[in-house]
Image (tube, rainbow, N blue to C red):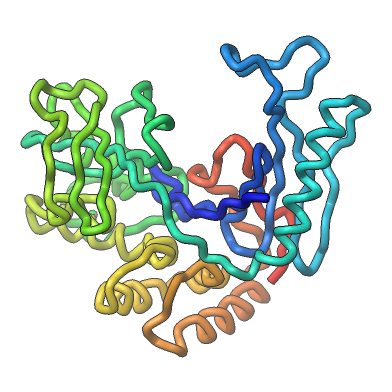
Length: 328
């Protein structure tokens, strides 16, 4: 039996990582390292259409699993398709119970779609893919800060950007408009295949000007925090820095050098609840006290503010249903 395990970033907006355990057409996915959703697709569907024949089942939700709650089965169907798919789900579940503590898995989404600026350089990361067959060329070419940013991201720098505005503009919406305005006209995006040393080889794109395919850009051309931080005036530079600080609990999911990780850990302390949710998927920690302190603070905050956070727009792949229990 061959099992695959890998991680992929959740993008536009970037709001975490999806870790996947796969066996044939069965997948178990998690975004917090605790709660797993298990899905099985029907590999016998008509290849040309990908649609089910009359009476066929295209996909089942085998169930949800966590170490503390065990398995909660999904809906049962009386059909041969279901029994075949159920058998795959059972094999994957058995493997999951043995390897779930191996997270975080390695990131394998080395193909990246970048929004380009006026000089055709990477401006903002829009999407990623595991292989060339998964590249999409029908995506909207616009970067988004996201619903969560609209609701919770705040930046003191907004006062300098819109001093006479009443009420003050929403920081997330303003940043979205600003970044998209810095894209070329018409806006263009390009897929790159990233190498281990950080270089990127240009592939096809969307509205891509002639002559850009097959180019090679150095690692320095790709913003490590997925949003370009150069070429801005001081107020906009401050806004972007504040946004990256707000994203710190999710950025810590990625492999960074020690100095970058130390800075992100300091910034993430302001969002203890998110650190508590994500920390099992952090690949490393510079400050040994960072995670324990954040978890203690998260317990205190939950005791004072019991309402659950709203679902996040970035955690919305069609097959993910997140954290229906509040387990730790």
